[in-house]
Image 1 (cartoon, helix red, strand yellow):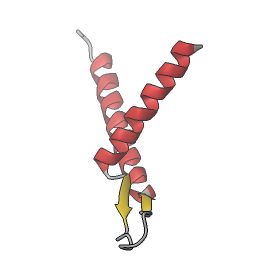
Image 2 (cartoon, helix red, strand yellow):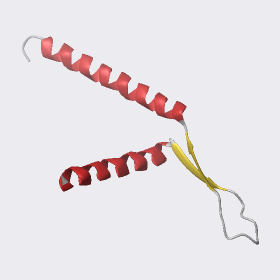
Image 3 (cartoon, one colour):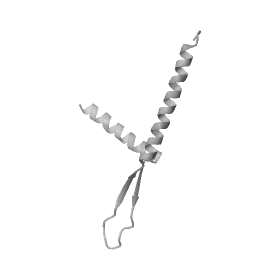
Image 4 (cartoon, helix red, strand yellow):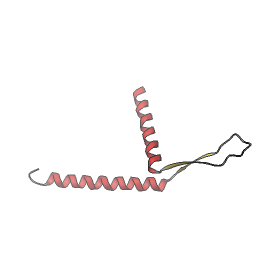
Length: 77
């Protein structure tokens, strides 16, 4: 059970890292007041960018599988 939990944590870290790299998630802070010790942090999720990237992956996967099927159906391979 500990291995499964560890694998899930690693996958979550990879997804979050990829999300920040691809621009799916952004963090921003507002200017804190000089007297206050609090800082507001805001996280924004760009669902449109996530959907675009998912569609691009789906299209590329379809293209690669179609090419592999064509090559496998050619005689002599």
